[in-house]
Length: 396
Ligand code: ADP
Image (cartoon, rainbow, N blue to C red; front, top):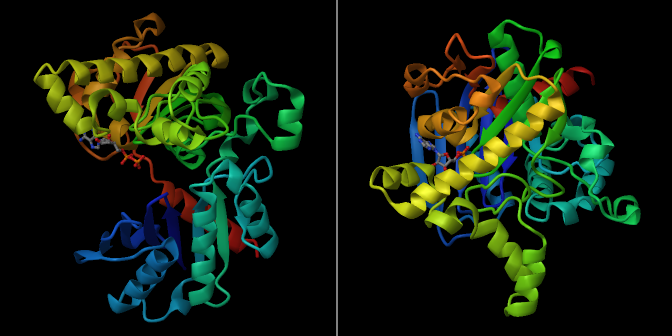
C-alpha cells in the first residue's frame, strides 16, 4: 500500500510518499515560496535529490507538479498506484476529534472553519481539490492539528469572555501541533518502556511555530496555542502572549489597522522582532559574539517556556517527562540546556554531555539523578498522518 501525505503550509507544500507495509519513505520533498516570483522545488527519491527553481503561483499548481514529478521521476508508473492521500488540516473546529475520510460534507465543514484559520484551511481544501482533479476515486483523509486537544477541559479551553462569543462564534482555545504532540508523547512513552496511560508529560514543540502541551495519560489537558496559532510561546516571528491592550493602544495611537496589527503579531514579532531573525542558528552564533539583542531574544524565549512548564506541571499534578521536539527542540542543545538548568525546583538534572550529542534518534538527555526524565524525540507529522490515513482506509 502506498500513501501520499500532503502538508500544506501558508506558502509551502511538503509531501512524503510512504510504502505502508514497512513505513519506509519512497519519495519526499517540498515546494517553498509558492507566492513568490520564483519558488523552489525539492524532490528526493531513495537514490537522488533534485532542486529546481520554478514559477508556481498557487498551492493547487504545486500539488499538481509534485504529483506529475512522482511519475516523471519514475517513483510510480500511474496514479492508480497511490492507495490513499492523507492531508494535514490545520483547523477542525470543535467538530473533528479524529481523522476522517474526506467527503463533500467534510469539505464544507473544513471550509466553514476558514475564518478561524484563514491562512491554512482554504489551502488545505485547495490541496484536496487538486488531488481529486488529477486522480479519480483515490480515498483522501483529513488529519486535524486541533484534534488531539479536544480533551482539554472547559475550564482550560474557555476564555473569560461573555458566553455568547463561545456559543455563537466558537471563540475558545483549540490548540495546534496536535499530531506532533501526540506523536512525540507516544514515541517517548515507548522509548521509556512505559505505557502512555501511566505518564504525565510536557511536550515542547519548538520550531518556527512553537507550542507546549500538558499530556496526562496520553491525553492533552492543556496547550499554549489558542483559538489561533498566535497565542502562547514566543515564536520565530509570532509574538505569542501579549496584553490585548497593546492592540487597542496601537489602533488608537498609530495609523495601524486590524490587518496591519495581525501582520505585525504574526510575521514581524517573536525572535525576529527582538533579534531581527527567526533563525535560532543565527541567534546562537550572535550570542557567542555577545550580541545583546540575540542574548535578550534567547532569554525571553526560554523564560516564556519555563513559565509554561511551571504552570503545566501544577496542572498535571505530577511530571514524569519533559520532551523536546521541532527544529529548535531537536537541534539546539543551547536552548535545551538553558531551559533545563532553570528547572532545579523540580529536581531536573540535564546531562550536558548527552545533551550535546547531535543525532536524529529519540534519546534521553537527563542525568540518572534527575527526578524528571528529559527526552529529545524527533517529530514526524507526515508518518503519523500516514498511519492515521491507513487506519481510516482499512475500515472502508
Ligand atoms: P517549522 O515550524 O517551520 O516546521 P522547524 O521545526 O523546521 O520549523 O524549526 C525551525 C527552527 O529550528 C529555526 O529557528 C531554526 O533555526 C532551528 N534550527 C534548525 N536546526 C538547528 C540547529 N542545528 N541548531 C539550532 N537551531 C536549529
